[in-house]
Image (cartoon, rainbow, N blue to C red; front, side):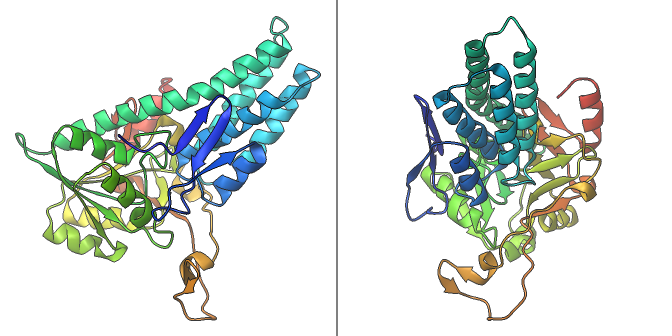
Length: 355
């Protein structure tokens, strides 16, 4: 059974504190929007789908306890708090898209004279709560389509070897995962020989989180340091690379955890197909290309220290972008809950209402 990183029951929201993993599994309570912003910004919860779900659920927890004098007041409160949540980690588009959709819903409900204040609140909260179940269903579909795509590249009942980067599993989503969901599906089908996960410096999400999930699920796996990817592809016959996405531009350029771009370059050199696994909510059609994606920069300390121990020389300057952008030309396919698409197909899908 895969991990539950988000627990939401009876208007109580708890998240598994990922800063403590793998040494300690501890849930912390999120009592409202301020807590939601903090756990996202501090990366106690991370992964684009999980950020959106936790952010929106933190608003639901707060709204349920509040009393409003009018629908207008409630609408204003919703808009202000959602915009605040978007500022917690700006590169992950899922929170931005969820906020825009929920603000539109609040506006519609506020204007509809047939909807009472209580009904507006009830319908709004149900929309947020339904996000949790939808994310799990979407992840299962991503897993199915991704596994089918990767297996189409091998003959007969051959087993596959997959490389992944960062964390895209139950710790980054509501449950099951995107790229790690593909790997879980291959394992369930008994078609996965081995998965290799990178450590993902400087925050070590691969070593701390993905490795934790793989061990938890008893999936055959090996951890490698980030600088071993080229050697791995030369010596271990990797079938495919599958990673997640924090934002996909209209042309298919994809922002993901720092280090993704270089893996895609190495994969191209070795003839290994490189896949993005992400829900449609990660696609931002308002961004024409990766050049327009805002890249978050993180504190120097993430590079200079491991825990409380300094590993870098004092006085050295640091550059610590949290993400990089992989050009669409290096991406074999984008695995979504609706199927697998080449980057150049995205514009046509959204133009035809595929979003």
